[in-house]
Image 1 (cartoon, rainbow, N blue to C red):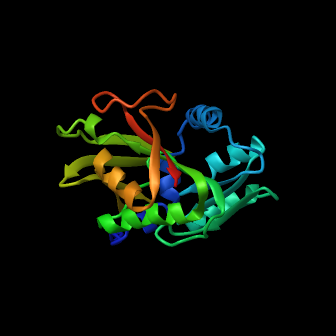
Image 2: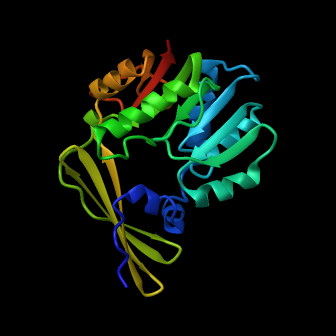
Length: 247
């Protein structure tokens, strides 16, 4: 039995248990290192509210809450939110939510969108709408941290197939750049069933984000190039991390 590809790959893949199997080796120390640097830079107050947008299973939200902050994590995947909800308390809440829809207005001092959790949509206006929604969600003077990859640093040569053997499953991973997207194809067999999933990410450049921010009434405060918050260098930085402020 062959699993058919969904027209909306993110709805299927992010809600699959295989997504979490494949990425179960993500280093929590990297996430905590990044968050510690963000806290030192932003210096949020304990009374501030933080929205973790596209929170997955909530690792960033949970860590921030342990630091004493009031956090709401939202994600499209019901499976991820079901898991994250087991960590809820009076200052940590989780909710299923599509970032293309407005969650609330003037409610958060900070919105965090971390580890390339943006650019999933094929139509540019959908990505633009997400930024507009974030702006409406922030209080005046509130800040967005958006962490994306630096597309200028991508090796545009041919990718070789990568095979990752995890929990008895051989995930065959192929990457390709097609037009303005990076396409990652993921194929494997489990319980005598063949599976195919895709990840599709827009190759958004700084000028794209600048247009999004301008239309949403957001002003760039700083641009960083890695998780230690070094200054962004378009030729060498692995990441493109924005701190923008709602006017």
